[in-house]
Image (cartoon, rainbow, N blue to C red; front, top):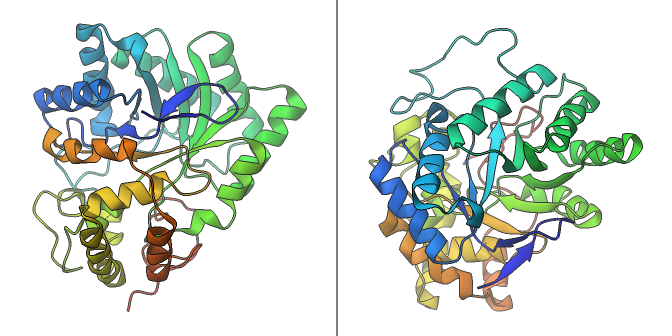
Length: 347
């Protein structure tokens, strides 16, 4: 089992992290338990969730399983604060909640309140890694960092990080932490897969320069790189694009599917499934601490576990680069980030 250092912390995390966006939406409680315990038994020691996942039920089921099995101390729990709300079983177009003026964004008020709520749902005294779930550009970063610093000082949070932030915002946060002696981001969690490689241009070098870990999401490009999609206008039953619609569906492009088909051929030649190769490619890219894997069932998890012991060869990396060159993109996995204004031409 390979463990990697998370940023500058000295904390060792497994080279794959269990993502739980499917927990309780649609995976039922019994399946969530099977997935989580299987991952822990395989050596995965970090679990990632968020207060938006299944409207808080994702955190609740994780806390329940860890408490009942007595395995809380074996797990690094990463959760996130604030990315709107999503009702399980409904697409984003069907469920648009009305949020009050102080129920959104990374104000001191909302961060501290959200952290208290996450602690209760998780049934724990502390959160190992507390992450900002998208950027709040209209809220001063020093207010955000001071609130997070207070949570760390109080012992409710061990480390802090962010998700899907631009490189300049990561640098700004580090600058302010150094100037004002605030706690410092130890990780960033961006989207990253062969279809959208834009973080290689600035974010990866920034994180390597300043010692920030990269825990990346969507390594299988929401199933496009797993060979699930053949038509950009017809989504497979049970896929996130079909179940949730909205920005999930917008990530499926004609060009992305074409790349997925060629990618599958490379995987087959190596004796791997395309899902395995997609995760392996992401795991062994420069600067990456660990990709998130988010299975809906334990049957989807099991084939991914051998990747913990695999290494990507230079020949395979070159073959993948030929499909989508470094730093480029054929699908927009930054489409929930308002700061990313670039458009994807899908022709």
